[in-house]
Length: 225
Ligand SMILES: C[S@@+](CC[C@H](N)C(=O)[O-])C[C@H]1O[C@@H](n2cnc3c(N)ncnc32)[C@H](O)[C@@H]1O
Image (cartoon, rainbow, N blue to C red; front, side, top):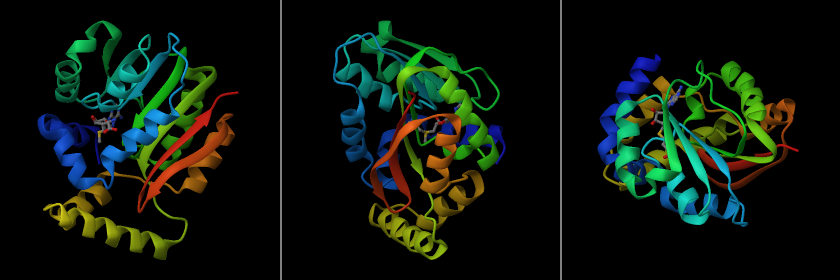
């Protein structure tokens, strides 16, 4: 799928983003608890990058838990950045927003935490493998990279079972599973956790771990030594 289509797809979702995610992603809200627990516990001046920030749902976790943290929200879709500005207006002095395509535009550097929520699956596998080197370079030593993403299992038959369970979940939420499944096949490039961890190690990351997984979704983290 071309970047313009990705942009149009998310521009249409900006206003109702969270309600939709709850119906499309199993345990979407529970994942926030898992991610929040992965954030550091000390009250320091963290510099955070929220890649593919959308409406700022993950930045909100940062601002709530870490009172002195500042974030850069980076996203391709202007409507999403507007939704971020509106949703997190009460934290306006703690964030800056950057409009750009992380495949080609600079993502900045000197970050203590990088979050990537449901966004890296837009990269093709070769793009993603190379991108992990950029993420590594953008992090400070001791920095943490946290992702929630769409994945596939190493075993094709298991992936098929996961897709069936995912469709059953979406149907139970009143959504059209076939519509969203087709969209997923059209625009996403999910990888296995084996590839994910192997590409992270290749880029220099350590302490790679999966903290939550259900069907074709997972929350993971890695650290820069
Ligand atoms: C599904 S939303 C995720 C929002 C939020 N991070 C979350 O965890 O729910 C994906 C976001 O990634 C953005 N995105 C997709 N490809 C991108 C790219 N190449 N560069 C920057 N943003 C991108 C989209 O515009 C969209 O806002």
